[in-house]
Amino acid sequence: MVGKPPSSSTPGGRRATVRVKSAAKRTTSSARWLERHLNDPYVHEATKRGFRSRAAFKLLQLDEKFHLLGPGKRVVDLGAAPGGWTQVAVDKVQTAREGWKVVGLDILPMDPVPGATTMQADFLEEGAAERLKEALGGPADVVLSDMAAPTIGHQSTDHLRIMALAEAAYDFAEEVLAPGGAFVAKLFQGGAEKSLLERLKRDFTTVRHAKPPASRAESSETYVVATGFRGANMND
Ligand SMILES: C[S@@+](CC[C@H](N)C(=O)[O-])C[C@H]1O[C@@H](n2cnc3c(N)ncnc32)[C@H](O)[C@@H]1O
Image 1 (cartoon, protein in one colour):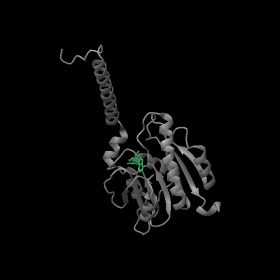
Image 2: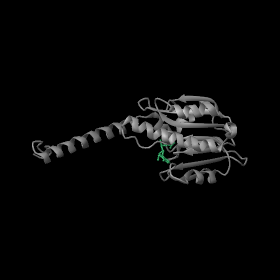
Image 3: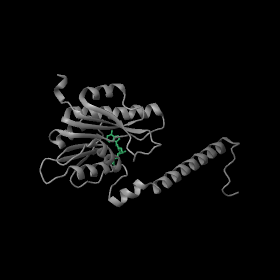
Image 4: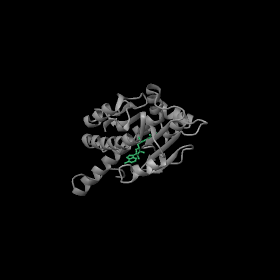
């Protein structure tokens, strides 16, 4: 009969049945994703306002709460693609005066964002941080990291991978931040690993965890927000 799954009584049949089942599971979860996407008010608002991603609202909300961005500031945006945070950063920092800067980096290609410098590189690869420093051409007031590797569903592996990205982002931030600067990094629930938190508490006047309303409730994503950088040489 057409459409009837192959018999699972033979090894080939069982494999085929498993394949059919997992394809069906994938179809159901993509359908669920599409439905959620179409009903998401942030997706609609992002389209209306010309943002490339709904993620733009997470930065707008973090900025509203922590006052991170402002005219004339110099910003680094790590994990920038497709560019929602970069758009928000340019919008908030650009002024008629010289000196403001937004540099975005992603491992994926990204369409240029007017006003920003963008580069494609794996941030964890040797030389990427140096190239980024060159593009920045001076100290930064804000280092943002929304970097996240695709999750594999294995909680501790996903946690380790995002922590490695956050730690690398802070290694970079520690070198380029101007006194008074701010650092934001995406983490998974459970918050920052003790070692990163200890460094942040030592180096900043305020360290908070935040989950902006635009971050989906079912996502374990959260952000660590550190403000009031005490200055690079304070530990010397
Ligand atoms: C959640 S998305 C960022 C969304 C972005 N903030 C926006 O507003 O459009 C996470 C990004 O981190 C990037 N990423 C993950 N690992 C990276 C790495 N090692 N180096 C650079 N970018 C990385 C991914 O390619 C992805 O584009």
